[in-house]
Amino acid sequence: MSINILNSQRNDIKDDESLKQLGFIELAKKKVAALEKELGRKPTACVVTFGCQMNARDSEKLLATLKLAGYEEVETEDADFVIYNTCTVRDNADQRVYGRLGQCSNHKKNNPHMKIAICGCLMQEPGAVEKIQKSYRFVDLIFGTHNIYKFAELLNSCLDSDRMIIDIWKETDRIVEDLPVLRKYAFKSGVNIMFGCDNYCTYCIVPYVRGRERSRSPKDIVREIEKLAADGVKEVMLLGQNVNSYGFDFKDGDSDKISFAKLLEMVCEVEGIERVRFMTPHPKDFSDDVIDVIAGNPKIARHIHLPLQAGNNEVLRRMNRKYTKEQFIDLALKIRERIPDVAITTDIIVGFPGEGEAEVDDTIDVIKKVQFDNAFTFIYSKRAGTPAAKFEDQVPEEEVKKNFDKLLKVVQDTARDQASKHQGKVETVLVESVNEQDESLLTGRMSNNTLVHFKGEKDLIGEMVRVSLDECHGFYYMGSRV
Ligand code: SF4
Image (tube, rainbow, N blue to C red; front, side, top):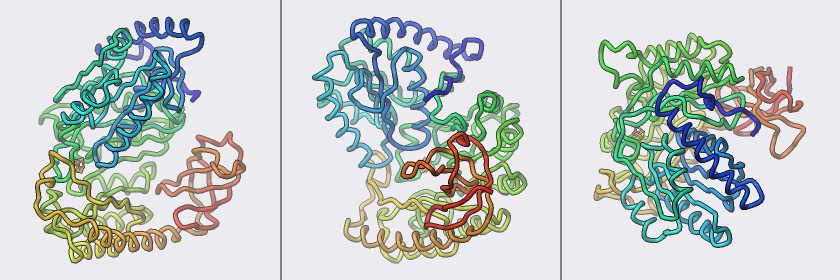
């Protein structure tokens, strides 16, 4: 990664806590330099990320701290400092972390200087920390989601100590601005606009591990995006668990209290920003003013990810989703009418307690009516500590599998039909990379998030180019520059 670390200069920084952490990075630098001398080579660091885009953004901050401290980034887990940024939304994500940790202990046996850290959502579950204390005693540092901003401080303590350091906070109302961040891409970046979630869907662990909703000040968000634009970023993705409840937590009369629609407008006005995405909105809060702003502003991506989760009203009620099947369909069709070129994608859970074939047929009915451009389908994963885990009518695995396969077929057929609609059009594509399979091709993304591969030179990476969509191959296009 050849791009600069944003916010690593003291004069960029307005938040005292961030300045304090920069001081800890200076201290860590001395310790990493001493290690370099002892090893006779530059110490290496590897950040392993599980889960969602919020975690990916957090990992960019962890990596920036490690690089500023003097580590060289590597992709392999035999590094001198390995950190796992964990997810706990699904049970298999937990199991994967424990599997990787087990393998990592072998590397540590060969490298006495190695440090292993683990952070993120899974660490906010008390059972998980106990398990690591008991069965993975070789771990050096454990921290959670609420104090990730003090990673530089924790890194110092970890480099000083041979004992396991555990620092988990139950909650926080703090948002620390201006932490250093190393972006994965030079031309696009995620931007957190809020943290936490107040919705308490009954299957979801997020509100327990990420805390209550906290919105960033619009001034801080715009300031960050202006810096990103000055640094060459063309596309931003506004991130939050529930972006369209942005600002609900500000007090009435507070000058920061603006709506998500207004924030979208402000972000579009930042010079240099050519495309604005957001992830994830909640259908219950998707108001008409947001639809109007998207419809009237071509900079806002023609892609809305609108999680349905289920299409049966009783299942939706028991999930605590706070909308009905009919309300969801009305909203999606209204969006399609007002923004005709929009792609609507969704998340669907199959196998929620009490969901039999008839209930899944309701979900299939929604898929057919809304014609989703794509859907991420998941088998319900029982998460200890959530209300749904205690529901008695858990569905047998075989029945879930049968319903899942039936639903998946409809999702795939619908998505294929939707994708082929663009054949022959000319679209603006943000070029992201050289194609992994064929180096003569570039890969870019349309405003509606569809991937396009076309012939071109790699100096076009990061540019917006016009591409004709020649051949639809299911979920992507082969195109040519015009
Ligand atoms: S909206 Fe529901 S599913 Fe999404 S993070 Fe919040 S509780 Fe979880």
